[in-house]
Image (cartoon, rainbow over all chains, first blue to last red; front, side, top):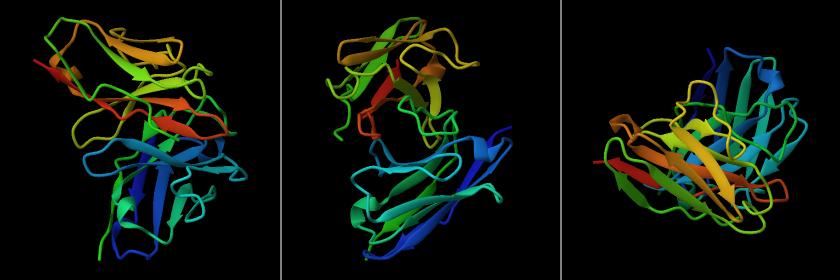
Length: 123
Length: 110
């Protein structure tokens, strides 16, 4: 059974940093791209970042480019999202999600999701 | 990367059919057949119900179907059940290796 478990969320002040983790099990982790998708309180979903199965290719939404960094450790089956220069508008539940392909494809979709971790940016 | 446009809410009675629209532009929905749809129950993670405009993953009932015309995609749910009450999101490639979700539609089963 595919399982994705996010952790690392919490409360942080504006300008601060946080690292989220997504621990995967039940599938061959290195053969799948991984994304982070967030959902602000009462709002819709927002795709923010994607990393290929090998970790060699990464993509970002404009809203986080230059502040967030996605990475992965295939030996430990964990994907990460390093968030820096956090803003109040980054407050959201952050989901990790798996896609079916090794390389980044335009026809991206997400076939498995974690339950999410809450990030609150507040002074 | 503007969000795709969906109706904020829709409702239907059990047994009826409802169609949720997802309006984009020539740079996203209109240029690619890479639209997927997700169902999200209250406090839950999203679940894939349609990929590549029309494909249903295994385990998704045939009551769910997808289509596209021009710059708009649609999700139709036939034979509405109480368990279909949820939020629904479309998702599309938006060019330059970026992707965008719709704003979401809250479906109420009366």
